[in-house]
Length: 254
Ligand SMILES: NC(=O)c1ccc[n+]([C@@H]2O[C@H](COP(=O)([O-])OP(=O)(O)OC[C@H]3O[C@@H](n4cnc5c(N)ncnc54)[C@H](O)[C@@H]3O)[C@@H](O)[C@H]2O)c1
Image (tube, rainbow, N blue to C red; front, side, top):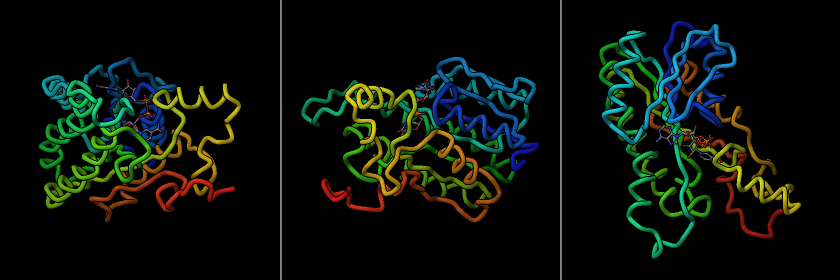
């Protein structure tokens, strides 16, 4: 019950890693605020929770969302910036500015908006934990297209800079960097591999030789959000089956 009496806001909570995170925090006693473009539900409706629709890329909508939460619960102890979208893998010469603005708007600016407008309440409270969902694509090339990778590298750097801004107020800021996880975002990859009889190739280049589940990322987000991580801040932790630990040279794995 690490989140008993705590209010935890999770963005991108209608599915995938965000939904698994909301479920995990709620199962550990948290009052969970689930934020998404789409409707969000908790399996156990008796647990204290709130579902809000909000486009994280829209700063005015983010401010309104945070006001609603503070009016209702009076505080935000935990913020999980998880909403994200992917983008084309086209080469840089073929990417237009609309793609850059759309993906940066959600993945990077959305994260910044929520930190900016949640931080004052955390500062007033003298504590807080923020966990951003970045990606292995923000650490190495090859896991996402140019735009997505740059947005996630931005999230990792924002994690470090905001950890410096807010550390003096007792607020920790960390990130997780998931590898290949089966969610709505990656469903086309999984569908293609299965229909082509190549399911055994999914995650095969990871040291653990498998892909991950949303719950495995949620467990790490919950750890970083909890007091178990009380002396960790400014870090970006891969949750990738060892993917970023090796050079992953083609042909080197059996
Ligand atoms: N699945 C993977 O392999 C993987 C790997 C690395 C990082 N990630 C990151 O994990 C996070 C969660 O993604 P997922 O894999 O669970 O995919 P997902 O598509 O299941 O979940 C993303 C959620 O974000 C919401 N969302 C999208 N744009 C939004 C917006 N503007 N405002 C509010 N909500 C919005 C979607 O509605 C969705 O519920 C993302 O940041 C993604 O980049 C995923």
